[in-house]
Length: 139
Image 1 (cartoon, one colour):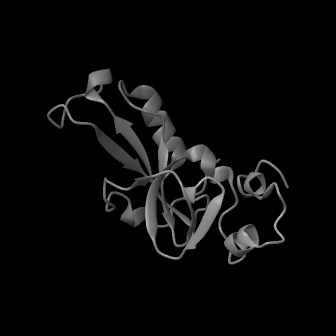
Image 2 (cartoon, helix red, strand yellow):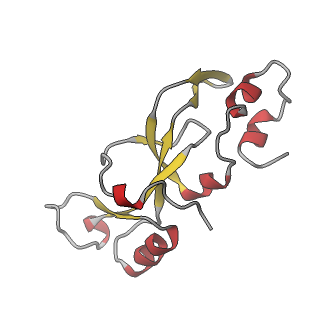
Image 3 (cartoon, helix red, strand yellow):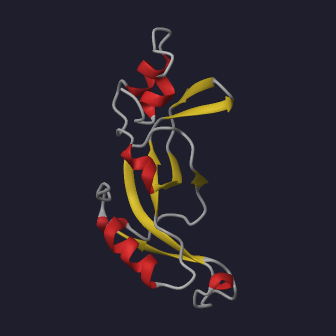
């Protein structure tokens, strides 16, 4: 249903604190995460702090989240090698640096970034519905 992770041997080796959402495009899925919240009934194994489990497969993460009290639905840790920053509404900047971010898995239905994705999006000839195209809503 959702992409495989880039390298299953690396899951669990990424930082807990990363960006949240944003960037519009993705390059790789690094792991799927299920955050657990003791205040919502999850086992308290981190002195009352939230914590997460990592998975190399979306379905495994989803199954775990459904069976675990206080767990959120899975999210994806993604790598963006390049991304689109939007410091102001409608003002887009092409950023060429690595960025780790947690994304709702639904965002992975957007096409994976190609060499032309961002230049085409920023082109003066881009269609007016370019954001909807990038989000996979329109063609």
